[in-house]
Image 1 (cartoon, helix red, strand yellow):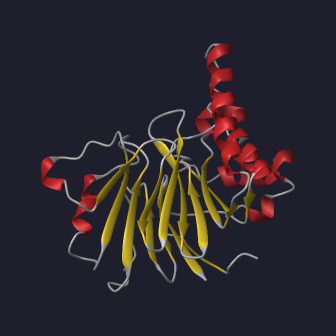
Image 2 (cartoon, helix red, strand yellow):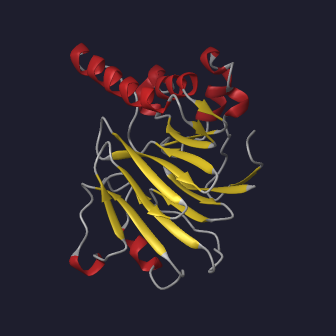
Length: 235
């Protein structure tokens, strides 16, 4: 059993028997956490909507806190500490006895995270996505497609229990291309769309898309900030 709480935008808190994973928190109300469990805090890049330096206030509130940050995240001297791990794209690091992290290269800023935590595996994309913008040169959009597909292909041998993947409505009709590519190229039990800028209607759109027919039962429909999902272990 695991519990996933949607905090807002691309922010999620995952709870398992082994501890907590906090991804790209920058706003939202955190639920009360078991002070006996360890906390692993992930920041995919330095954009304001993915990083809030208030995360360092968790020090002292939990018995053990680890910060796993993209190499480009600036940390003030007052926040620096031996509990911070910086990762570049394509690196792998054993953060603790039960947490190993591998990074992919984002085609925007920073990294995406693949996290092996206890018996479960999680993926958080950060801003790695199929960014196809109307009005951009064809060369740009082709580069975004190729870079995205190249990184997602690196996950094909993984069995992912829960993935957090962008579906940005600003992309127009192309908003779901990244999610569709990800779901069709990976073995993912549950997908949590994110980065939808508070537009919860995007979930109704996803349910009507022809491309999602084969996996829409694995899309977790988010209706509000603070929503919790209790999930059974995947087969």
